[in-house]
Image (cartoon, rainbow, N blue to C red; front, side):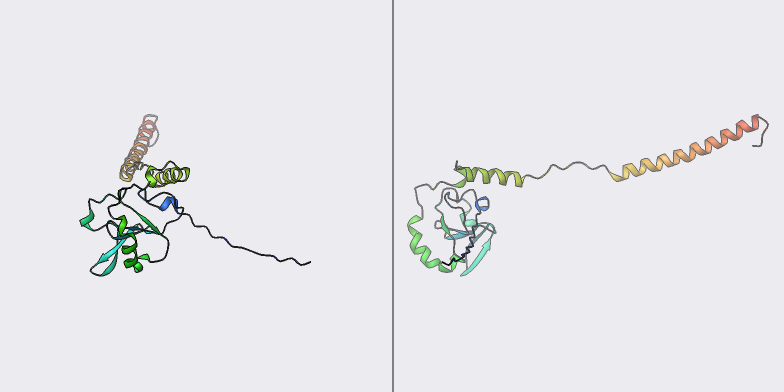
Length: 175
């Protein structure tokens, strides 16, 4: 009888906490969203929109100004986990054009009650809080105090010496 040893490597990549609140629920990992209403992509790792500008793919932190009133929570999102999906843009336009102005609502992460989304939201809220800044004492103030104290100490020493001399003179000693 022989035995065969088999090793398997499993790679699980979960990025629930990186997905935007307006992303649809049901996905543990998302690379891109295709947004048919605005004909653009959103790249989750860098939090950037990818769309055509004069025939060239542009990566921006926001959608073009013509979509400034677009509500990401209401629009339909298509999850895409293949590299550079925008290179297949024409097929996406054809395949997903039926979702432009889509009236059925997708449940978005913000509105989900699933534990994995609730936990991710609370973790993000904790990580995004900045510690309160505490006021630091002004260094000049303490330096001035030290200088004044030193002057007082010199004066006190001088006064002590003068007092000592005066006492010695009164006793018949050298002054």
